[in-house]
Image 1 (cartoon, rainbow, N blue to C red):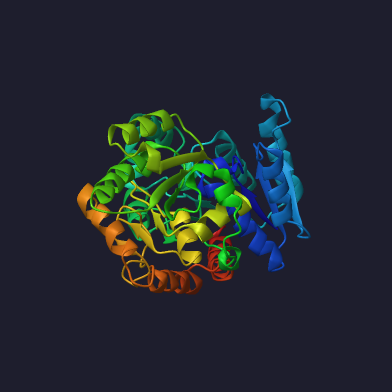
Image 2: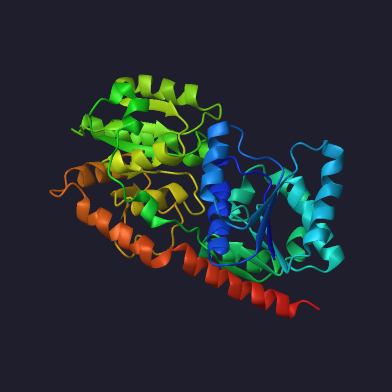
Amino acid sequence: MILHVIDNLRPESGGPPTVAIEFVRMQARMGRRTAVMITNPPSKPEQRAQLAERWKGLDIEYIVLEDLPPGERVSAARAHIDRLAPRIIHIHCMWEALVRHVAAHARKRRIPYVLSTHGMLHPYALAQKRLKKWVYLQVFPSLIGGAGELYALNREEADYIEARFRRPSSVLPNGIVVEDYSATESGIFRARVPALGAAPFILFVGRLHPIKGIDLLIRSYAYARQRGLGLELVVVGPNEVQQPELEALARELGISDHVHFPGGMFGPEKRDGFAACSIFAHRPRFEGFGITVVEGLAAARPVVTTKECKLDGAAEAGALRQAADTDEAFGDALLEVAALADGGNALGARGREWVKANLSWESLVLRTEASYDRVCAARP
């Protein structure tokens, strides 16, 4: 039995819930006994239905603590662990109370556990709200210290973990089901953005949060429009307070008629957006991996991003266009890709093949299970 623990599976929380859902799905499809324990399930009925569809017919025990009074959740989590008696616990993320309590109980019961950081121990991530995270790590050092292995999203983070925390760390990138992104445009995405009409567009998908650099992307887009770029820009993502600021920036730059904010999209709507776009663009301040960038590659769309998106090996393989992180350089890269004679199809095809070769869920599950074996063998 493999028990996965993550605080929530809400799509608006970004990459970790998506990754956990698919990781468990593939393990179950490969015949592994799996269970998932969370506090908060997807909040909307349609999101819950999509989760049920992803796991339909699979032997996955789904444990939700949300309906219990907060004071009873810790004891319930411990009771579930004792009942399941998992061979190993796979913890996702760092800062939530649930994962801390589960790790403590695993140590007490001498159950080995591994920890997927989802980029949260990268130096850049730790520098955000630095004091709060420093205090947490001082007060609860055993969360990291007790882990048999930590899975970082990229080599920079893995090297930092080993140097600072003296714990075994390996790179475990996020995977993707490439076949989910093979459909042609159906029209459901454009129906959510009526002002777009049939116009070609650049797509961004992600949380509307400063770390995602959407303001930087808008500035680059404005620069490119001034130099003849004819594509619209669609920014898809749940509002995290920043949307009014971004809309004001678009007005200030005189491009508000060309920048669209349709809100968050998930499942088929989001995948249709990838199928419909001409370019996927991401200019983050920091991105530990960039699952939406991988989605763009899987959809065979030409992708423009920067080295701040830590997608090890993609730029070197020619799978995407990596631009310098300035308004002018990123805007020039958008112009360059938009002007390709084949519409960026060759770049998109290379990206899709790179994802198929490097980020298939089956290969990632097998790699992780080799790690599970190491951790279990080393446990006294």
